[in-house]
Length: 319
Ligand code: PEP
Ligand code: MG
Image 1 (spheres, protein in one colour):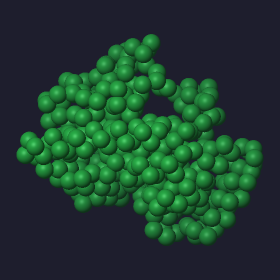
Image 2 (tube, rainbow, N blue to C red):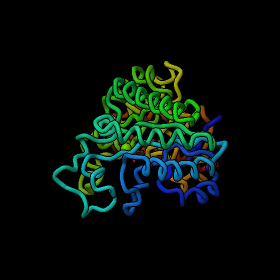
Image 3 (tube, rainbow, N blue to C red):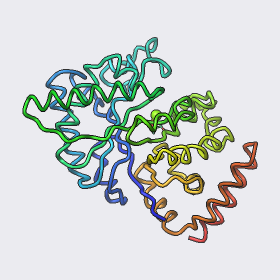
Image 4 (cartoon, rainbow, N blue to C red):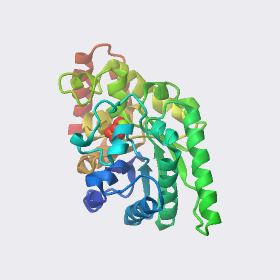
């Protein structure tokens, strides 16, 4: 069974550990971590472009010839203006809206920011193999608009004497509307990456940062299971790869379940890679398909949890 396992990375400093854990490529680089500690003076302009290009180049070179998937800044307006999304005291809580102008919405509302990031990635692209991933996509029109900015950034760089290769443009599937229209998005994006962390919180209306309700967003809710089962099939119908980069992939039972649903690419926190590699090397795909099919027929949380844990852990303990 050919299954690709990649690393989720937040910082270049984690690249060496990810490689030691077996990662040969990066399925999700959360580029907003570049802003940590106010390290970027601005999100637009030539200085920012060169600082970003330097950071992307280091990362791309560290994994070459493996691919590095750079997700464009997943920030809302307040985080972008604070220039350090990880310092809560700097956030304007009034404008910090996870359902507002965020991710690709912010990129399109502030095209100079998106263009600067695209130019930086294109400058770094010749260091190896890079892909660009758009966060928080809701409509196909957003992918088209981002692609137009990417192409114009590439043309502008070419006029300045910097030849950049064509770079694949992917969409994150983490908004329920995007998940339900994944076959439509597949006609506009070059690849799809399923973000189960946000998909679960928005599908189940359970804030992932609020410990009192985040348990509701756990991945075995039947609503999420139905979607997870449907998505690989819809994407495959359009011939497009669908990877899972939410943290569900770090849980051996859920990883096995997703393999049973037909997912063939996973990106996860590097520490989870060795266990995941053992599962995909030794588990029987046929057994996982049967177990996953049965799990998806359950209608309440407890039996699913119990069933999946018993059936899949049974298969896994043989490893
Ligand atoms: C996700 O939402 O599942 C995801 C991978 O992105 P993040 O955790 O950065 O929101
Ligand atoms: Mg997300």
